[in-house]
Image (cartoon, rainbow, N blue to C red):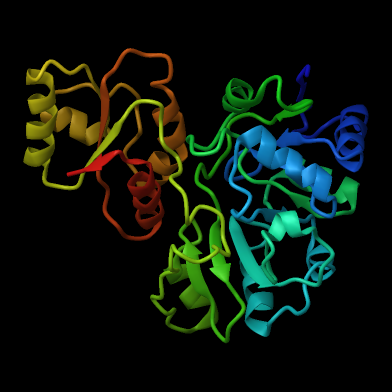
Length: 338
């Protein structure tokens, strides 16, 4: 299969001709990779089971791993669920469009392949002009997991998508680098209060403040069918073993030099201040703030592709706010944790 790439105009949107091409492919049951504010998504008509099966095939994704349905506005969200609780309406008013996904009881409009046979569906309204332009042109929900091979770091640029899926999908929309860089926060909204299933840039504290509640700290059981993507299987892993060091700065230094003394070629992913303190050089500049680190994380992990490093060592980050989401991804990606 030949893979075509479209570029956005200087206004930050698709031209009318390119929009017609992308929406026509989706309507015909084909796959289109497109940018969102979090990561690039691999889209297919969420009401078309045959189209959704193409997503699983292209990604090599387990079929019991549900997908997120993307819609362009609240009215489209209401069309695919049984009921929208009052607290979800509050969250939508404050955070959507944005990097937050709501799990609700579905009404059967979307295919079983999207929901993995569950009675719930994950749905969100992305905050990206191209994604919204495409979704509103389609007038149907678009299921869109990350546009990468299953298990690899999520794509934050069209080049990442191309590296993984060229020859497997007909179209990639190049919208430049994504902003947030981590997948959306996922909330189970089937109960009286929401439960965070996957951490993202919309933090628990932000949700608690919006609803004036304290969120439960329940964690999903991994032996059950997951309601959310990113829970059951290993995710975000680079092609080279990743070692996550959760100790002190001295522990990090000792780990780096022990691997080097053992004859290993060591790649480093470190904060700017850590490189200064240790007198070392990070192979990819993660930045200093947690927002910079989140935005650069997947590019940093992917930067080691087709290199001859034996191991990548990354430091840990404070588990508060967005740092919880960063550490969640690193814990799932790591081959070993010290």
